[in-house]
Image (cartoon, rainbow, N blue to C red; front, side, top):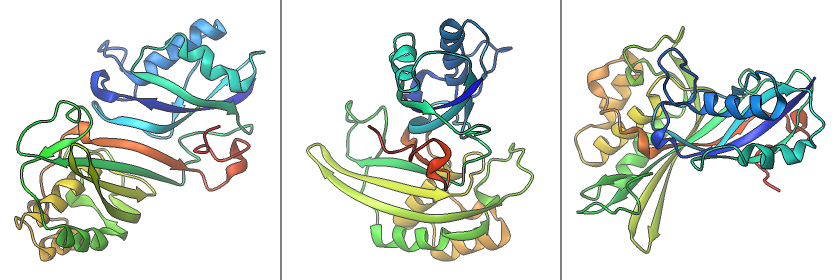
Length: 264
């Protein structure tokens, strides 16, 4: 059998996350993909993702891998799957990967974006993928706090209490705030790139930065959270709908013949 890869985009609103939970009969991205794979290949096929996204979290660059014995051209697999998949998940790109490639174990860094929009009232065109903020925060203060989060730290304070992670030390290569003026108002996108993330980590980072922007937290609070793992020093965990997985880097473009994120 050969090894293949997918780059997936999905609207996570109606999914209970990535990972299949067959005992609970919950709708997940993995189970949806594996159901389509069984129809196409005629056998049960396990699909591995670069990482698990939680319920309600979206993706535009989720990378998956699987093994199959098929005569379908690798680049045409995307069309075959999309013909069977529901409208809230689509394969953007498919191809053959190197033997032994594993989308999860091979991932070197991932980038998520948390999206906010600023408005007194809800905008129905944004509510599905962004979180509304009623006032305007101090963006300079938020940027200063974002810089403090970069590097290797113990992110215990930013991790959900029920996490099963063996270690809470992670490295963030970048935490960048990008403001955007649109026809319907101003948006803020918080891009976070790291070698791995704890349960609810990015959503709690976003809540903390927002608190700093509104003067509810200080830079000293952020420093204390990193140094002492003090959960009381960080902000709330923001809603899942604002979070999206945008890119996965494997450090070796030849793993699939070319860079996964180069759509063609």
